[in-house]
Structure formats: C-alpha cells, structure tokens
Image (cartoon, rainbow, N blue to C red; front, side):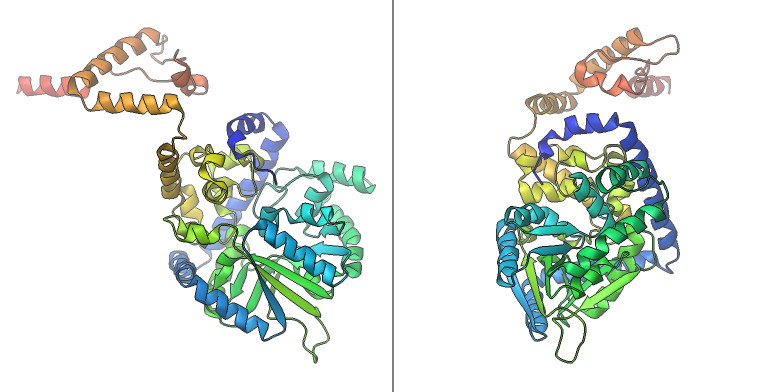
Length: 471
C-alpha cells in the first residue's frame, strides 16, 4: 500500500463528508466497542488479566533474540523451515522463491497485516502468480480493488448495501441484503480456490517459543483451510509476535477475541508446530515460517519499544473519536487509528507521517481499551516532540508557541493580554453573550462547530486583589 500519511488532513476532510462512510463507521465501531465491554465484564478480574498479558508481552520483547532462536530450533525439529526477512522486499522475494521451488501457480491467503505491510499481493501478481484472499472482508477488499481500513474488520468502511452491489456487479449474484446469503455466496466461490491451490499463506497471532508453535485465531475457518489443504504452507509473522510460554499464549488468547470482536473465544484456534509427519494424514508437506523484521528491531532499541507489544486487536481504533469519524483510509497506510499513528511514523519515518501524531485528542480512551495497556497517548506526545526536534513542525505553530511562552513568562504581558482578550471577546459576543465566530483563521477553526465564551469581566487576579483589600 502506497504511503499517503502526510495527506491525512485532506483525507480526513473528505471522509467527514462521506455519508456512507459515516454510516458504516457508526455501525461498526459502536457495535465492536459495546461487544468488547460486554465480553470484558464477564472476566472476574479484567485488570489483573490485562496486567498479566502486558507482562508477558514486555518480557518477550526483552528476551526477543533468544526466544526467536528457541522458536526456530523447536519448529525446525518438526520439519518446518524458518527464513528471516530483514525488510518487506526480502520477505516478498522469499515467498516468490518458495513458490518457484514448488512450481506453485495458485495461492490462497488468510488475513495478515504483515503481508499488507510488505505489499505481498502486488509482488506475487507481478511475478505472474495468482493469489486469492480468503478472509471474507479481505476477499471483498481484493474484489473491489480497495485496501483494508481496520486491523480486524477490513471492510468496516463499507455498508452491507455496498457489499451487495459489489457482488452483483463483480460476481453476478442475485441481489440480497441478507448477510447469510452474502456469506454463503462468497463461501461457494472460495471453496474451489481452497481445493485447487498449491500454496497457502497465513499470518500468525502468536509464535510460542517454548514449543515452536504458530498460533492462529479466526472465525471463518479459512486459516485452517490455507494451512492444511495446500501442499505448501507459508507463515509470515513479525518478530514481535513471539511469546515465551504456552501459559503466556493462554493468557493472551483470552484477551484478543474479547478485545477484537467481543467473543470469549474465536470459532477456530489453530496451533501448528510443523509440517505433516509421516504418520499424520493431514497437513502440509512443506511448511515455511518467514520472520519479518522490517524496522521492528530498530523500534525495540528506542523508547517506543512498548508499541511492539500490540496484539493487533483493533480495540483502540473502535474507541478513538478520530478514527470513529474519519475511518482507516485517511491515515494513509496499513495501520490506522491510535496505534497506527504511532507505528506508521516509527516504521516509515516521522517526517513521512507528520500529521499522524497530531491525529488524536489525547483523551486516553485507546490506552483504557488496550488489552496490554500500551501507553499510546504518551508515545503520541513523544512523537510530536520528535517532529519539533527534526524541524517538521509548521513554522506558524513554532512561532505561536514561542510567543505563548514569552507571554506566559511575563506577569505584565499576561495581564495585558487578558485585558485585550476581555475587550475583544465582549465586543464580538452576541446578545446571548457567546462568540459565534473568531476572526483570526487559526482561532476561527474553533468556532466552526462550537461557540466561544467571552472572557470574564474580571480576571481571578483582580478579584483576589479586591478581596484582599476588602479584608
């Protein structure tokens, strides 16, 4: 996906005026947030579970090199081949090499944010290979030539009616608004692909070092189809997906579905520890695991290392007032919402995603919803400071802050500015005492959607002095 993060302000304005998008976002984020709250309320001590999950992820990040080697050693013993990809280009090249080695032509693929990050589909198609997305949302996105707008719900930006029209246009389906009919129709189309594919590709929700196990959680069963039906199976996972023990996985898998879809557990949980053994009738003959770095090692050595603890549940997106109004495409890359506003600048360079750290009200809802308690607001503030340090802040903003600092450090200027503001706002106030429109362009943005109360007739300092004199 082409990086367009610096166009966020313009994209956000367009999104705010898209009525269909607003309808889809209102439905999707509200339902997801309510479902998460219900599911988490069933946990005896949700905060203790979150602390335990956080500790597991941070411990894994501290011991990352050793755990990755342990994972490789254990899964290799079961017939899998582990490959290491330094960046997106290397990852895509490795997948194509595996396909060539096994004379693969048709590939089925389960949902994977890592492959969205590397642009794998485009690379495979450029190499003359056919790749079919099998997650329903991703299948719709691929069919429409679109891109996902949510970590968990790729088509949260589409209404049911839009999906119906797409199926009618692209697949010749008899029109129906019934979700079951739409799903059954897509399932029929995908079943042939599963049975005829020579390679399956999935991501991974977790990699368990203790046993050398790839863990995948899905609701549609397509992950199992992609990993067991084709003779060649490829897993692509970011190196931060590794956890130390099965017990850590048991903790995290209680939180991931609750946070992502409001379920106690997803419909399918697959634990895969290697290629099919001689005495096993099912499973792939060849299994490859590609461990993707693509900037993660660099992040791990910074004060933003905590961002790698993300388990890709999407809960922070669903509660974010910015995401709720502009959706995922406005963020201009694979990762959107609060965590995307952190990850995109870190992976692609803060200058290439300068507006994203500012795409937040810093209300803290993202941290409150995060199952592993990532302090996203704090990292957004740090990224804003990084932008200033790198000279990426708008000149007008820098000048305004400098003037504000000078004003606030001088008692005389502070009181003088207060007197001017009181006179000005009282002159602009309407009959009800409210200021409908501030004239200065930067301040005028405030009154586009809200009133501005005039300054008090007497400031606190004056009231205090009068009270002291009275005593």
